Image (cartoon, rainbow, N blue to C red; front, side):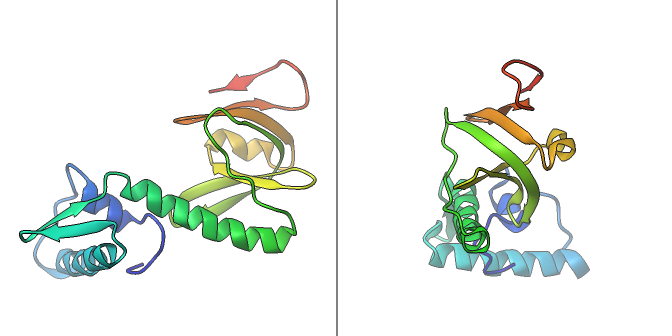
Length: 158
């Protein structure tokens, strides 16, 4: 986890406005030591910098780490599925068969497959019942507005 090229719990705690309180003993001490090591790795990756004894994190550090992991996993999936990866962008229409959920360090993703390509998108619990079925939606800044099934109009989940 120290050198995970992904957004981890440690990263979220390091940038949190109200991090979990840690005791300076036992597990709390271990977490602090691990955070110090992770902070150093983030500095080496140029995702943070130390100035005057204080560490400053890039504003988009978590998103950058999530994207790094997504691209790495997408490369592996591309080899496995023998299909190219298409990244979901804001405003893009996502459609295909929801083949499975992917567990990543940064979080869960849904794997949407078409005949010639695939797109991993952020997972939502409502998708669980749709695995193996056709889905479509529009990528928004904070998620996807989903439509399930092949019908032109029908239920929509925002």
